[in-house]
Length: 185
Image 1 (tube, rainbow, N blue to C red):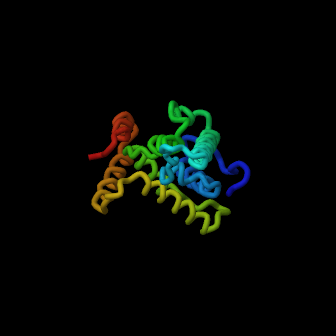
Image 2 (cartoon, rainbow, N blue to C red):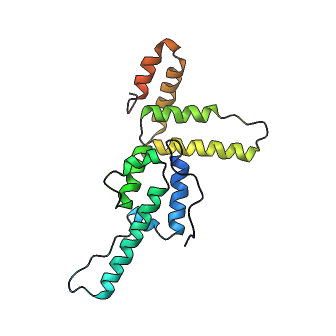
Image 3 (tube, rainbow, N blue to C red):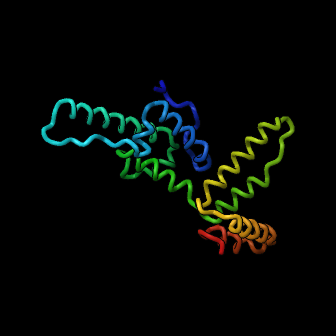
């Protein structure tokens, strides 16, 4: 079991990919991940209720409360709005954050590709650090696309991105509206 508080940054509007990995690892080390992922459910109590069954339920509910509490504490204040009415369910809390931060909109994909293609080696940066930044950026792109994604769809996305980037500033309103769409068809 992990001891003490998590030492990584709280979730904000920009760090979901990193935060979710760190939080999952910390919850695993704390013995809480199975509850948060929904793989472990609270035991059901059937008649006759024995002291052992009641104790098992109480222990599980205490762990659910602990998991929900840590999720709440490990997000920035502005992220807590997503927990409205679900603070008692760490499963729903985790799913709500994932739904908000992994929205698969055209603009998010465009920005993820743009970030990848904008990476440059910093003056004092090692090649391994550069590779790590590229891998992290690639992971963000993969998270934003559906599991059935094909090479043909990649070709279409890259062509759309090239066209959008090629437009002059006077098309900024049009570009913004395109990037708000779920899909560029």
